[in-house]
Image 1 (cartoon, one colour):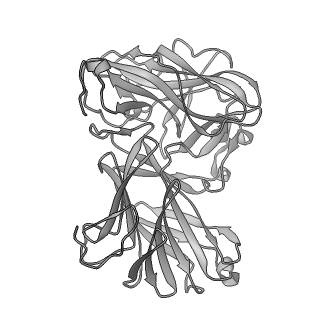
Image 2 (cartoon, helix red, strand yellow):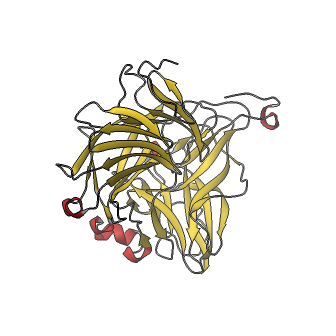
Image 3 (cartoon, rainbow, N blue to C red):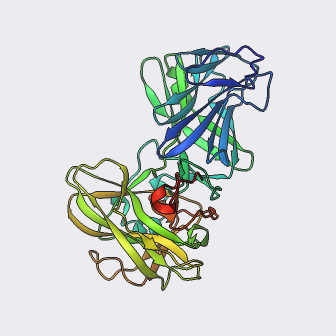
Length: 422
């Protein structure tokens, strides 16, 4: 592979066009990682790029260095040295990091990165203090919401397209990652949260470190933006009698069924506290050829039981095998049917548009109503989806939808009487 600038070896990566590349598998999703820029040979840039769905969806982040640096590797990291600043690019357990080590007090407390993206949107995760009274009421009150410190002021990253057929990927809710709230830590272990701002028009992401921290820090200081691979939403909602049921409502998030399709099962991101025990009912509503959930009829359901002390994770119903009518639109809904103790959780990300409808239900512990009736809307994407497969052939993947997932795996002989790679 071309290595005209003499890059050192980096474990697990190969060198391509003066950059490092590799593929990883995370949560049934294949991710391509590029460190440097394969499109600009002859020079190394402090940049990484993450590609999803065979690179039909991607984003790249580059530190805006004021001069050309010296590149080296050490301990699985790529180092880009700029005097008293060193950019460190490396894999973490759940994502990729592009940190900055400051060996001396910098002249400024802001650090700029370009963020170029292809078919993804970044959704700001506003602090609870910025929620309106109506938004808090729709979630049952602020006491029902827990926003981890690294989610406050962060950005969720969602695909804006339904990719073409790809092998080994699951779309789930369309989430491909999360830009967590950054922090700075000095040599004595003191840590402070930093502000994160993304300007959609300029494509610049800025990390601001509190000046007071830099003034008194024991150097070196490490500034750490973290880009996670997670597909689960970040904010935790305690589901109780007030938060009853939600259904994907935007027309772009509905699934328009093709011939010979079925919903195999449903999946929800759930968890509980030490005493939390309860059951979710998850189902699909058939909206016919319309695009609004009001009046939609319940096609069928599955159930998920949450036991005490369950960690945050995706959990899937048993097989439901619900046949879909070609040309009709479908949406996923869920509701709490029983909570015998403690708190059980659902997870969501905020968006910039109305993404869900809230169902009006006759009683808190009823099963999902046979006919959908809207009580209100909100701008959240919940971690829930259905998995769709074909029962008689291979279908093309339709446009964007957040509530339905396709199986992007090899179709086995049990379905088609032979094996066919998609």
